[in-house]
Length: 128
Image 1: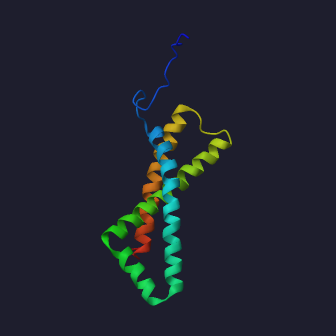
Image 2: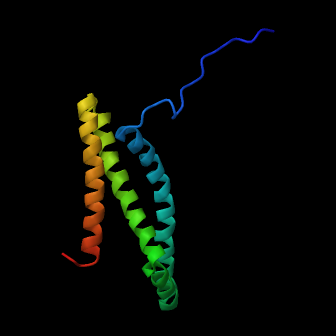
Image 3: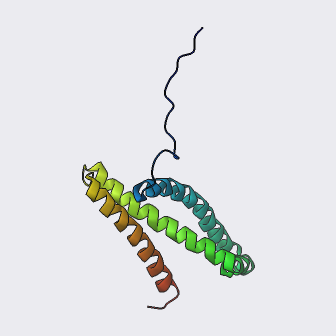
């Protein structure tokens, strides 16, 4: 039997990276991260229902530097997934497929995600 020479599929090293490509990958990653965040919310609810000692333990862990970093990453994941999801809704309506539009909307998604994350933390700490 002779072997047929078939072309290989291109992989990530072949393509030049773009913001659109990174946001596509980040959208999937943030979706998975939100699953971990749902476990965090579940832990919080169980701690509240279990009494003051359990809640204090939760609060102590989440008040640590690692806890705050995790909460910040969760907030950013939520905001990026939200903003990119809104962009996907526009795409579902057939809008924003021109190359210039995708560049503009990618920058808007990234800027909005960062701004909403910072705004959430500023409001959460009562700085506004």
